[in-house]
Length: 166
Image (cartoon, rainbow, N blue to C red; front, side):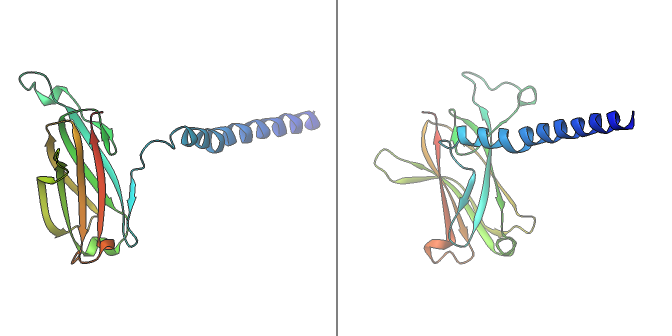
């Protein structure tokens, strides 16, 4: 009887290991392989790295309905169309949290120039989270730009292209 119980316990352990391997090793790799062509929400320079999450609420065709009945969807740097966006940046390095960091959103004009849409002046973010709330009124290409510290060298900036609509 105890020999049979040992075999049943052994088989149960093997099944549990197989299920854990499938759920935590095989499936995440398979899903990541399928999304490699998509954008990465981790953005880096030689000295700094940030993680971008964009919360987006599509604009309606006519009068604005009550936003309490609608909710923001989560994106990275590709938004489906015009609407309201909350760009949230997590500062990954502890050192960056002690520096003033500026945050701008600009739109590319047809001639290739940039037109400032919204700006947050440089300030220190000890919690490591920055947010910029702004409408994205038109389809097109936008640029989020973070400036760290004195923002002298190229590596003191992280530029994140944002596509609104296709």
